[in-house]
Length: 299
Image (tube, rainbow, N blue to C red; front, side):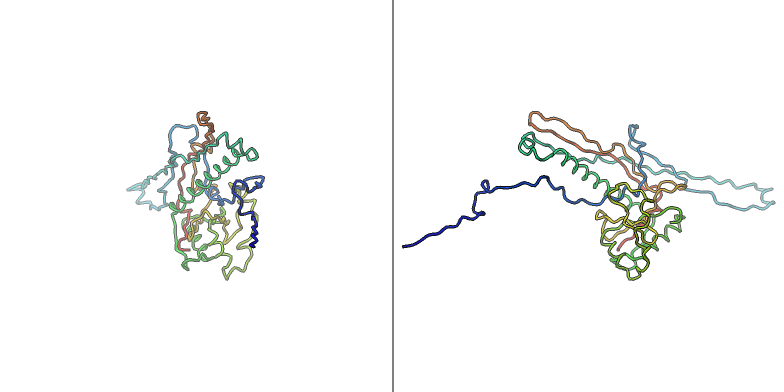
């Protein structure tokens, strides 16, 4: 006589029989820190205006003082100098967008989730991250000064000081405005591990309210070598940027021009029983005064 004993396990059940308890909301997850909008002057001059280009004039050749003797003045007179004015163009690029559809059946079957709000919010996040990366790339490409890290693969206090030295040689001084230091978490770790990190004011919270930020949820991380530090995983590894903000006398360093701010449009596709949503934006970015942007590479 043979006795058979069989035990039914939860994992043996068909998938459509296994019960599921859904969480009360769909988790959106973490997103990249967006900080580069702090490095540009934002303008709406192209909104509702004809054209897709904004030209910013700048005095490229400036006067120099000279001397003249009485005899030279009597015979030859003064030498007349001609200034030169050039312009930097800010061109509106391609449309940045995110499009998605939500079916009526999905909303009927899952009424506990507000899919419209969830997806619109994530579409806005995606466009904002794209915009942040685009500004970063313009600053990286438009830096007028650059240097390589003194120790390959490591960002040090000396590197930041040397970057500021290059800016000072072009008349950009931290005494007038507080420069910004944009770093990846890898480079932030280098700064905090610096063996000469002995004075707390080199990297301290300080008076953060003095520096407005584009995204209130991402304040400056502190100060280091006289710079406000912005740490983001949207920064390119092994690179760091020192960027001076718009100067009260010298004007903007970089300009970010909107042709169309973030806009949401929707259309009903009745034949398919669904709603179409499109989030889009149009803008252009240019570095106007390149010597106020310093790139530190190989760090």
